[in-house]
Amino acid sequence: MYLLYKQTISAKSENYEVICETKVSENRRNFAPKFKSIFKMNIKSIITAAIALLISTACSGGAKQEKVMNKDGKSLVVFFSHAGDNYAVGNIEVGNTKIVADYITEVTGAEQFEIVTHKYDGMAYTPLINLAKEETKNGELPEYEGDIDLSKYDTVFIGGPVWWGTYPQVMFTFFKKHANDLKGKTVIPFTTHEGSGLANCVEDVKDAFPGANVTKGFSIYGHEVRTEKAKVEKWINGLK
Ligand SMILES: Cc1cc2nc3c(=O)[nH]c(=O)nc-3n(C[C@H](O)[C@H](O)[C@H](O)COP(=O)(O)O)c2cc1C
Image (cartoon, rainbow, N blue to C red; front, top):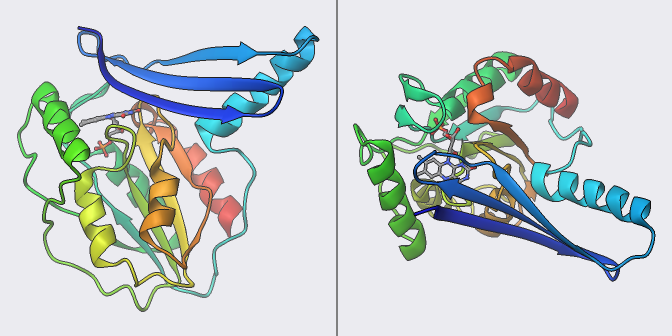
């Protein structure tokens, strides 16, 4: 069987339509992106340039930096990260997203709240993706441990792995509990992933926190986080 996960991002103009698909191979654990393009223009070079631009925007979240952080305000990183049997990087003691969260704290001094559930402890990769698929499909809201008062923070980073095209469902439990707590605050989404980039995460954060100033977000491959700290630093320094 080939297709376990399929995410489609599409964008249209009157001249072209590009569809970006990410497929997951069960056998090869391959989240390699596959691009399908359909176009209706005459000049080949214009088409190529338009597609390159569209793909980079749709699939990477864009590269332009925003100065969104209030340097004097208090910042928080809220994140979920799954240690253990992990796609692409084997069995890891520290999850990929936690590593990015720690970089953010190192560079900004932000405090942290980790969304913790023991629901997935010790699970092998394949049963985990099957369980997560069901949870996503059913909109389940698994419980997490503890909680945090968000009132004293001006900037809140929100990060997690992409699971089936968005954040893990346990993060939506947090979103639901705090739906009214981020009005007027800056919210900066980030993801780690293996091909889907930001997927639907920014849109889902916007939906979850009406009245928050949600920025465009940042994504990095999970298998890169241990070696590409500079990418994270560059992004954060661009926000300040
Ligand atoms: C249940 C599950 C679902 C996943 N779904 C996707 C996906 O839809 N798109 C993608 O690019 N990567 C997907 N991945 C890969 C993770 O996003 C990636 O390995 C991430 O860096 C893990 O971060 P963590 O170690 O902080 O949990 C999935 C991994 C798991 C375990």
